[in-house]
Length: 180
Image: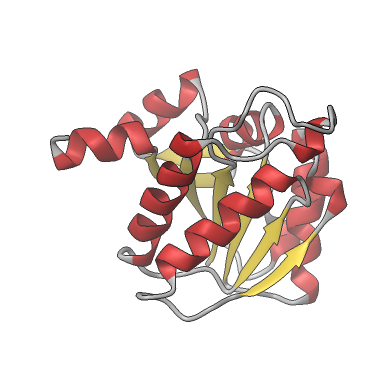
């Protein structure tokens, strides 16, 4: 079995001081949400063996904050920063995921952007938790986190409609669960 985890970057400022989209930083809510989702991931093993992160500032910050929150609970995974994750569509993301076969992690986390991440999550889903699927259909919100299992031992076999959606969680859902 291979487990794929998708994490969309957390909430950002509207515009970067540089005017470049890739330079947009997390806002206060984004930093809080990245901490919350990282803490949740850290308390719910198994943890990723490999993390692929977009080099956009908001994705890097999301990963760094989540990693810091996770480190009290989990060992540190191998991390790669991949320019091709920025602006990737589902087919490009799937190709990047299949390339993980080089390192062959059992559990892979991808930190990226919408619309590609949301579209990927929808197209990977073949079965799984019906409530999670319904919640995910509308959006993969900022700091949204989805887990898929694939009945294979080879990342090259990961394909659209073959994933089992195990879980979908977001900062908003975490607040509902905790009663805040």
